[in-house]
Picture 1 (cartoon, rainbow, N blue to C red):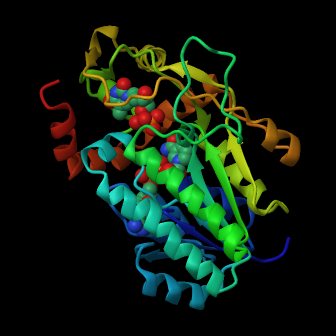
Picture 2: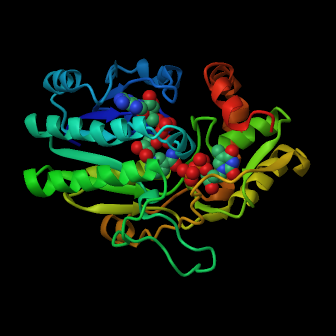
Amino acid sequence: MDKKTIIVTGGAGFIGSNFVYYMLKKYPNYRIVCLDALTYAGNLSTLEKAMKKENFRFVKGDIRDREAVDNLFAEEEPDVVVNFAAESHVDRSIENPQIFLETNIMGPEVLMEACLKHKVGRYHQVSTDEVYGDLPLDRPDLFFTEKTNLHTSSPYSASKASADLLTMAYHRTFGLPATISRCSNNYGPYHFPEKLIPLMIINALNDKPLPVYGDGKNVRDWLYVEDHCKAIDMIIHADCVGEVYNVGGHNEMANIDIVKLILKELGKPESLITFVEDRKGHDRRYAIDPTKIKTQLGWEPETKFTNGIVKTIKWYLDHKDWWEEIISGEYQKYYEKMYGGK
Ligand code: NAD
Ligand code: TYD
């Protein structure tokens, strides 16, 4: 395998850090450089083990900082840039859309300009199935394909869809060698405690109420994070410039069923479930059709949800230090604001 230098932006967050570990393990001769601004969602402790590797470098920096990005690209001469850096939480985007537009749209523009200037071989934009909006609950025959219209609901998904359009524009207009992946909901280690699965695990462990939005019947299509990393690895190594790939493993579940499953695994009572006010504009159902990535690149998910959720719960039990530090800090204020008194 040729040597490559890969810049991973947002590598101190949930999926980015899993990708860093996946790549370090699979390609010991690659150089992996993580660029991350360490926002509330980025944790250096997550990358502790990577820091010990000689072929890994962490750089604290903002993808919107043109000069810093330019200097880093000049220094590292990356072959590939994978952009995970983003504001990623829908609820926060409803509270304060502005930062989502700045990071999720302007950030990619800065990165893509740098890719053009430094002749980077591949820019990969990590997108989401949320760009397609939602599907009705009573049409289980419908799925998102790459041809489904973009039809966003939240400021978060609108910002991600904007970045996708910009990426395709840079490809067509400037010849940027770009690819895009649109994955369904991920779960697994290092998932920030504000998201459904870690929030419910941690609240259940602390015997706190489990806040379920609306009727709890909203459906998400869950994929173990390592399977997402595998998909991105396959895309960046394939001859597929200009392509968009949907990534998902046909694992649709209603929120309430996930919450009940977590309670059962932890031996906690369902009386902890508390139905709270619904999210504004709450998408009903997401469901990915992964036919394209399966047939063109041979991608298959490896972890079934029944195993993945048990592994994930065990990870949170074994890594209390990681999440206790997070929930004791700034996050406490966010939690009080969003769920205060519930
Ligand atoms: P996350 O919130 O856990 O991590 C985001 C990371 O980006 C953090 O480390 C943060 O410090 C960093 N960051 C934020 N703003 C930055 C900036 N301006 N400059 C540099 N770094 C910055 O997010 P995640 O869940 O790991 O998601 C990663 C990517 O995958 C996002 O682009 C998201 O849209 C996409 N995605 C997520 C999911 C999911 O289920 N979590 C599913 C599909 C796609
Ligand atoms: P989330 O993890 O925020 O991911 P996304 O909104 O990007 O899919 O939420 C997953 C689902 O869980 C979504 O339907 C909203 C719901 N949810 C709750 O019911 N309660 C909560 O406290 C949170 C954070 C989410």
